[in-house]
Image (cartoon, rainbow, N blue to C red; front, side, top):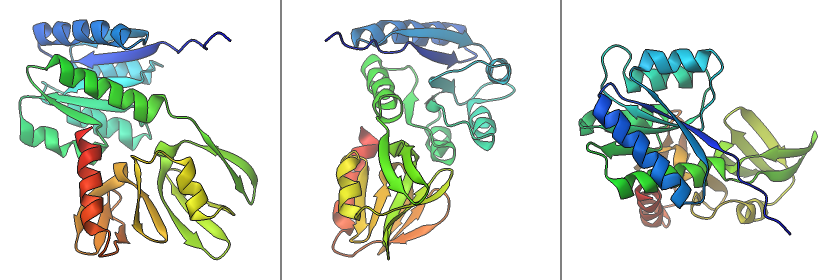
Length: 241
């Protein structure tokens, strides 16, 4: 049987430094075919230009954004997109580590230091592809019928009286599955039990405190004291790629 062709990915590079912008675009054009992926790269010299392209119908799967640019910088552009519900994968590029580390505020996938290292860029691109673009939907039985969801849209799940309650990016859902059955359907590297009745997506964890974790939304979940060390290790492995 012939393998189904993978779709072409549209990737935007936004940097106000012409030489760095061209170098990053060239690296992307080299790396993606090496990974067996087809891509089209479009470069922008300002955040305003890229935002305008998106507002006029431009669709991208990955954005590589310089954090510090004149006018609309990468951080402000990312915030504007998130406010409109746009969850396109973002890789920040910056010579300012402090600014780059604020990327958690806008769900950035990776932060790369300038000058961009080829292999670190490869890892960041493939991380975005694996976790956001290559994910398979899972089919869940719910009260309203069968529903397809992407694992990356699931923030956490908790047991309840008739099965499992799911907290998703776009609301809540309930399924009659056991939480162990749900866990078996999800990427093991991305989900962890913080409590025997709660399964959480590592991508949404903001911080870990004693017997409690905080999500990016500001909500908190309990952590079993017996699981705390292991959760910290798994979160570090996840963030390091």
